[in-house]
Image (tube, rainbow, N blue to C red; front, side):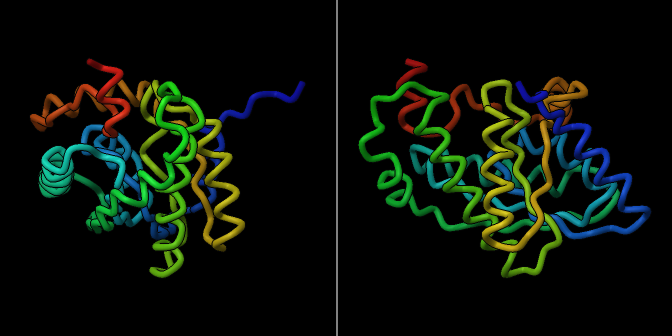
Length: 204
């Protein structure tokens, strides 16, 4: 049986290898609370563009609220290197096409994995267009998200798009707990469901 990979250690090795250089990073963000710790941590080492691409979010009012929170956080946060913001298309039909036939699957399974790939694929494409040195996602900070699957998808897309994927498991080193603290400091809205209509139904 292969040893389980430590994605936090892999990230630390990449950072050590930068040796003072400050590469560009396209950071896919699922929401402001999850991005808070990641921005605090990675802005010391990268010039970050936060890419907000989440066509899974339901309803539209919720999407608008989360976009605004993300932009407000970027304006408020004290970071080492400046952070830019880029909003992707809110193409909900693309999400529902992806989910077709998987509507009844429980949260945390194949539908969620397909949603990871939908969003990471868009991020990889944008990262390539921008000429970014790396891309990654905030999703691994959540205790509900599968970091192994996220990194597996990210590595595969890195090969396909020719942009390095920054392996991570941001919940490590108390990352999730720190994101909760930062959410309180900045007065962030923390949603009680992942974002899609299916996760909303499971919360009812």
